[in-house]
Length: 87
Image (cartoon, rainbow, N blue to C red):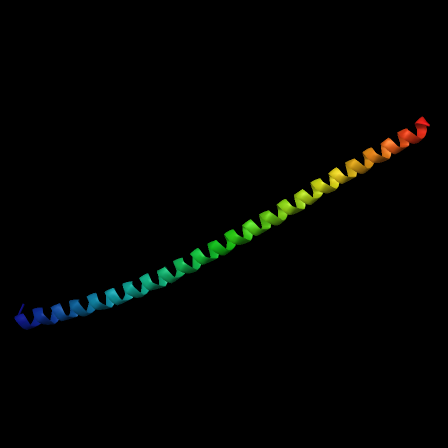
């Protein structure tokens, strides 16, 4: 192999290496953006899940309060019936 052919092959290898580097860099940039997007989506989903759980707890609390109020009304009604029948 002559010196010129070795030099030409070295240039070819250098150019291929630059192209590979450019492709890898572009892929890395794309993957970083995808990761960032996924992380943001996960944060949004977590916030939505927390909000839904808070709403579920509020509904459960309201239901318990209604049941308590209903029980109190029933007790009050039973007491009134007892008082009326005791007279």
